[in-house]
Image (tube, rainbow, N blue to C red; front, side, top):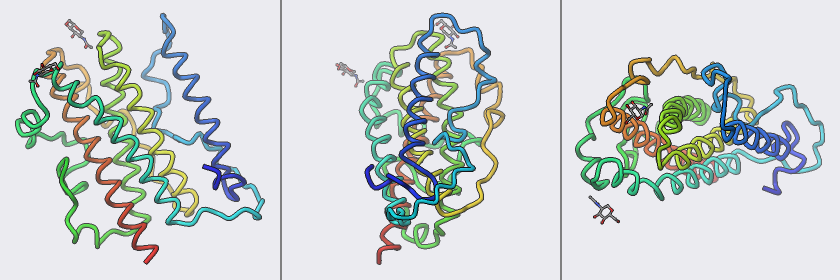
Length: 255
Ligand SMILES: *[C@@H]1O[C@H](CO)[C@@H](O)[C@H](O)[C@H]1NC(C)=O
Ligand SMILES: *[C@@H]1O[C@H](CO)[C@@H](O)[C@H](O)[C@H]1NC(C)=O
């Protein structure tokens, strides 16, 4: 974390602090017993995850800038943290929601995908499986960062709906999924920092429109539970993908 101090182009230390403040603010809004604001019009947590003022231009050039390999290792570290967090409650969630094990639920629903989530072409691996060498070899850094950012924003849209539904129903796993949204935001922030640092023009942010009203409004609890599993599964697979991709690209930079 120290290495960020006096970051020449964007002061990541400061933006992390402001990101934390946003988090606390959101947490306190969230905890309020009555909330009258229509939550659907609030800006998604996946938009500008670092809370950057994009005009930042700190000319302080004394402190070494993070090089690309360091930026990528920050992405990997946060993705690992997010994945570990998800894995800690994954089995308990499946046990209590489906009364079954991870192995069973994973094989039962393995073929089931949502077309609005990243496809098998986008993330060419399944959960707990490695990426093929040829998929790693054709990666290009800036495109990989942009793709990862878009994929993670898309998962954030799905996770938000899960958390909304669980909040409405006082679900036992509400807190874990709400924390998941913030872990994901941290990963997005590292990706955003790498994109800004490398001067890559961002794509338009993913919007809530990607997730259809029909999928949001499932009335049947078991249908909704499967939906939640598929989103959560693909999110974890997305994190595994990010870890493998940016470890690989980091090694390539260092070699
Ligand atoms: C669910 O968890 C309970 C309590 O730990 C355990 O006894 C039970 O075997 C688990 N069920 C499955 C299907 O894994
Ligand atoms: C909440 O639970 C009730 C009763 O089980 C169910 O009818 C309703 O669809 C649930 N709503 C959400 C958003 O989870």
